[in-house]
Image (cartoon, rainbow, N blue to C red; front, top):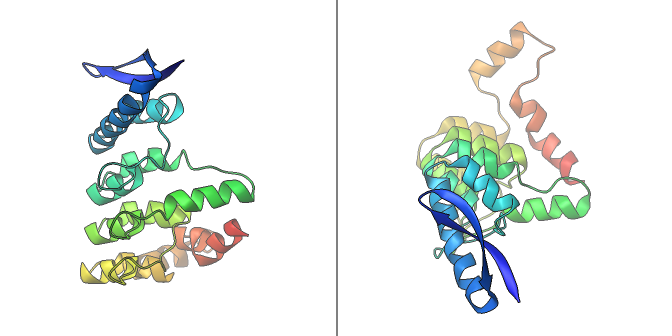
Amino acid sequence: MKVAVGSFNFGVVQTMLLPDPWAKKHRDNFKHVCAKMVEQEKLDTVRWALRHGGVALGARNPDSRTGLHLAAALGKGRSLSSLLDFLPRGGPEARELAAENLDCVDDEGRTPLMMACHRGDYRCAELLFGAGARADLKDARGKTARDYALAKKEQDIVNMLDGVESEEEEEEDAGAPAKKSFLKRMGKAGRQAKRE
């Protein structure tokens, strides 16, 4: 039996047929290549790997980190946004699977949201939180995403996680009452409705 997996040849994605015993080894190598593509923001390659290359969104590198972990830890907002496009959507099962991917933990118990907060990257934290990542989970040391943001003195991230608007957003909303801020649309109430 033969299994189709992806391989790289000078950066060009090709498919090749490999006998079964070799398939697992090459699929694992392919996961490592995908991790590099997330780091380098080679978005077309990442999308291809997720659609056709047999790599799942929850695929892990040797450090037990997923692509979401890597993108958040490195502050790669474009890669993170592309990965989030592959979250399952739809019924309760799809929402449960999406939450599983968003809140998956590495060897140290850290979620992608914790990684973004540790880096102090507002955009990545906002993308993950807006997609439904839970801010109340604790890592192996008992720290939450909020604790990581506080340690980095990132008050904007702390406010977002707490559902508090910044003064800048309040001023924007005062001029246009019909316009809702990101926090109002995707804050705690929006995330609760998504999960129900």
